[in-house]
Image (cartoon, rainbow, N blue to C red; front, side, top):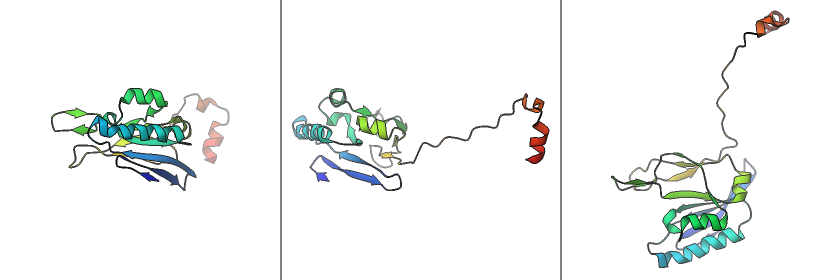
Length: 160
């Protein structure tokens, strides 16, 4: 685990899944000059990372968010829930993101970030539900009209 003034980086092991990943929680300081060390730290973490990695960031915390995604071949994790992550009461914006590396996309493709209700804060918390596999809804029963014409239909129905 490593801790700096702008981020905490560590490993998470999910015992029941037998899988793990690295996680970085980011809180960037307010000026571009102060955030330069954060940018360098995120680039270093990405370059030394082995295995799945997710970082929770604000797009303003990296020098140029889109450029960072391209330079590091990271992607924005699919989100569910609210359509915005920040509000001052009249302006609503999506500025908080979970970004993942290629290994995450290969090994944990079914996981997604959930944007929760903000409660008393101006930012909505982001969470990742660590489910075994995606839950599929039950398939509806379908009766095909050709089934009664099958020669064993009545016998199978009687046995069931």
